[in-house]
Length: 217
Image 1 (cartoon, rainbow, N blue to C red):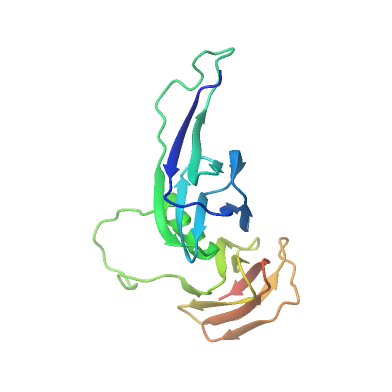
Image 2: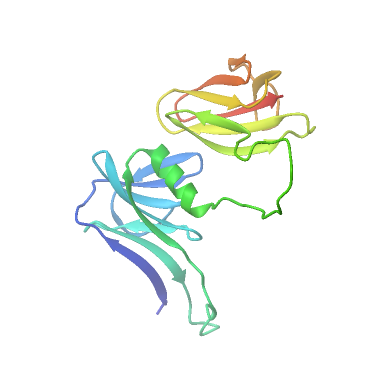
């Protein structure tokens, strides 16, 4: 025997194919009664809406023929240790009724699995406003997946990937941008056209492609 603990979500409908997120995108799979891999969610599209199941620390999901979404929470064993999973397990399961497009599903899963970090501080004076953000993002068909400082420390790297047809990515900074251009994973400049207008940076992303922008403020 193999002791298994799973969470099952029976649905009132069946989908022809089910959506799972994978690195830099998503994949549609037919119903099957065994686990397949997914980063954050399994979803059952139903027109432009869907039910979605996401777990904060598990990567095995399945969708059965009867329309049940399942996530395997603990897949244990009985030998050589009879109780290898003994202890307290903290697992957060989220259920959503949301839009069926990949961008909406990805942003939903990110919002519940990657909580905002905060640092409490005492009252003090400062020049910054009480509310703000380093930059804003506008793009219907792409998801921002990473933000980091460049290797030489002089620039900001913003990585996004397209989840549908060609998309236009707009980054709006709260200060003027000196220069911006596309780079590869080694920060080598690429030929992708990037426009800079004051604090706005615009670039096109091809369908299902990854784009990294190097921003010099």
